[in-house]
Image (cartoon, rainbow, N blue to C red):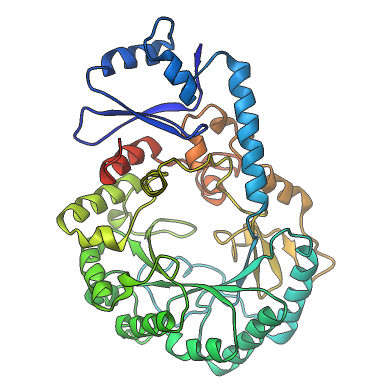
Length: 448
């Protein structure tokens, strides 16, 4: 008998309880404190002959008779993942501008090349001609995500062209998601409704309660934006559109989350079903530009702080349900999610475009020249087939550092852009503190 390469243990905080987990088979069990010493000894030595729980551990996929048996299971699960992945719709990101009507204190894009090209009917028609041809054989219709800068600027010339883009989306059968600061939703939502735009989701950011948000996300004229955004969110929800409410979290605004949750409760947003209103917490971090690192959380530290706050303010548990590497899924569905062999959708299930006519692999790379894959407007500059092959061959079975990593089927190798930025290659790993977050999440959701 051998231990599966994907078997690992996780400890609940402030507890003697130990969890044994395997994402390949979706198994998680609690090792009782009295059983723990022998189990950990066996695990360290990978010696299972005569172990009372050996048959159960084989049944759960923690152990295998031999390497060949585990390899067969890996191949089976990889085929299942690939079949499901194929059914996932392609997300087509269009960065309509890098201009913005805000002057956020932590802007991710302030050092990008703010190019002169602007949205216009010619580039819009070229965009649709390209995607209609490239994605015509997809088994599931792709959808378009508008991205910026700020995608929903209300300036007259830009607005006219954006409306043409949305009409083309409607007429060509694409639903549209939007990543917006939400400031102009009050203007755009009635137009969406009147013109039958198929809005898939609107992602809007509120960085805490009014005071916290307005200290971080202000207009170019340094005016607060919270109230206008909130009214736009309310109008969108009442109009039947799904809102994904995001907060960018660092040490400056974490403690304002309970007050934001209470505000959302007071406006009735938390009473909407999850398919119409959900929340996301994004960690403020360095992507392509520098940040004040004194205020940034490490990933585990941020969730530890959130869990601590949620124990003090139960409203947070209604407001946000963190994923915690499958612990939310286990809590809601009674089983772990399927294994993730690839968490980087770049040039596979995600493609990005900008108004200069450039093609990129994903949201994290759009607008960054070193990640440009080619052009959709210039026949003399076709997409770089070899670069695309590099992105498309990236998964946890091809990345050397991930092949033997016990937690890789939960993190899926992480983000290729961040792996390249920090480790020098898209085929390097971008790690997550999976074991620690599993223990934290199991405790948060009362699992085990």
